[in-house]
Each structure stands twice: as C-alpha cells, then as structure tokens.
Amino acid sequence: MKDPLSIVKLDRRTALTALGAAGAGLLSERLMSMDANPSGGTQDAALDTFNEKSRHRLHGLLSGPGFSGQIPSNDVEWLAGSEGKPAPALMTGLLPLAQTYARPPISNYRVGAVVRGASGALYLGANVEFSGQALGFSVHAEQSALSNAYMHDEGSVSAIAVTAAPCGHCRQFMMELSPEGAIEVIVSGKSPAKLSTLLPLAFGPKDLGLGYGALPVKEVDLSASGATSDEPVAAALAAARRAWAPYSKAPSGVALQTKAGRVHKGSYIENAAFNPSLPPFETALAALIVAGEDGANISRAVLVEVEGASISQRRVAEAALSAIAPALRLQVVAAQRRG
Image (cartoon, rainbow, N blue to C red; front, top):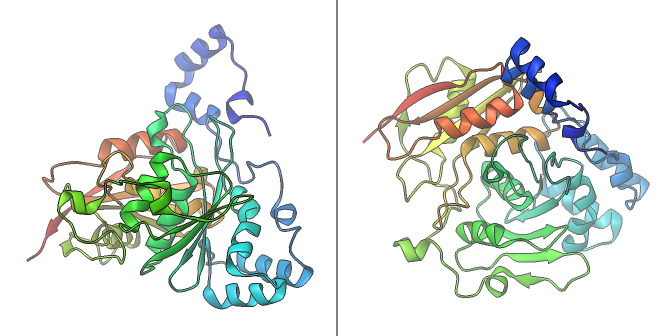
C-alpha cells in the first residue's frame, strides 16, 4: 500500500490555496489517514498458516464486540492444542495478524508484536506513527503490545515475540516492566534471548531508587469532579489512577470515545530513562487500534491529570489528537490526590 501522504499529491500553489481556503487543520485531515487495513493484506491472509478450526476460533475473537487486542488464556490453550504448537511458536504465528494493526504513514515499515502475560493470555501490538508530527510521538510495536498487557492488569510479562529485533528504545521500555530483564525476546529465525542478554549493564528503576517496576500495576488515589457520571471522564480517571509515574509524580490517563460508542483508555507509563516513557494518549490510541477501531472515528478525547504536577501531558495529547482528528478539542480534567 502507498504511504497515506502520497494519496493526495499537492503542488505548492495547490497547497497554499488549500491552506488559505480551509485552514491547516483541514489540510492535515486530508493528508492524515489511519485506514483500517494499512498492511495491504487482510486478516484472512495473516492467518493462512493456521488450520481451519483455529482460523474460525480466531475470527470469532477478532469480530467480537468487545475485542481489545487480547487473546484470553483459555483460547491460547485451545489454539496451542489445535495447532500442536508450544506458546512461542503460536506467538510468532500470530505476528502477521499483529502487523495488520500497524499504522506507519512515515516509515511504511510495519512491525507486529505479541506479548505473553503471566496469566497465559496473549496481547497484540503494532507500531503507530503520526503524519506531520515529530518522530518521538511514534508508538513502537513492543510498547503497543506491552501497554496492552499493562492495561489488562497483567501481573508480569514472560515473553514478547517481534517481527524484527527490538531497538534500544524498546529494550529500555521493557526494562521498566521487567527490571531484572527476565522477559524472553523471540524473533523469527533467531534463538530466543532474555532481555538481560540484549540489554547488559542496564539502567532501570533501581538506579532511581526503586526496588520494583511498573508491573504489577499500582493504583494512585485520585479524585476528579464529575467523574462518576460521565463515562469518558470516569475512564480517563481510572486510567490516571493506574498510571506508572514514580519519577515525575504526575499520573495521568486518557479516554478516547469513538462514534461506535466504545471508550478506550490509556495510562501514562513512565520510564527511568525518561524518553521511552509512553504518554497516555498514545497508550489509549494503541488500545483503540488493536481493538479494531479507526482513529479517524474518535468523537471525544479526555485527559485527566494531576493539577499543578511537575509535568503536563496536555500539549503532547493535543498535538497527537490534531494529527488524527483536527476538528476535535481535547477535554482536560484536573485531578487531585487524596490522602
């Protein structure tokens, strides 16, 4: 498939005319495309290595109204038996499916990831990029899959399968969820390796005085007015309460409501090295995408963050939202710590 930026070809005069007539926001809307099938293939094709019964089971999961990028442990066990494969082989077999969720309008490089949680469930993830925005806004596939497991309240992560070897940024992000480097990294065609092997002499939470990492999720006691009567605000508050922000002490959460009525939430997941931290908007957007929804269908976006905290997610969330739905305005709700 062509890069979404090449779908509309504008010369300088046409671009200036469009900007003058409609404004930069509308032009961005024309240039930004988060289509539902960016890989150029279908989920049917992505599952063609599975037998007919397994494909039927997976299609039932994917088409379910509440699918959230998670394959529950009972389904994983069933699929492993149906395919006659151990969990690592099942994970690599699901990577083409994970790739169908990639949104790479800048690089056109599609990465898929599958995480195995302590519960035995599997979590899909894929890379997400934002047209017109700095590359730092990107969500790596590993971050997408790991944050998916985080938002499903996994106690720990035992393994991650990726279509390409994880970059240093992702290895650092993994260290926050597995400070001892125990996660097994699986790349097709290569021998599995522990994160501690791929990231020797690592810098992690213990270097900043913590004896634990982001998992299991720890809840922060926050309150926000009107949260109980408004579903997106309540969801954003719930995500903020579950945020991992031990370094900035600035927990935050985002809820994205779509035209279909679903609400997807994302927590801020901080990192000891700071830059690999995953903003709550990106966590929520990654959740929306692996749930099978389109970012262009967002009808409401809510950010809940602590009033007067040392950092704010507002500008980052507004910039990311403007790349997807420039007509929408971010709703910001102030939270207060209790106790």
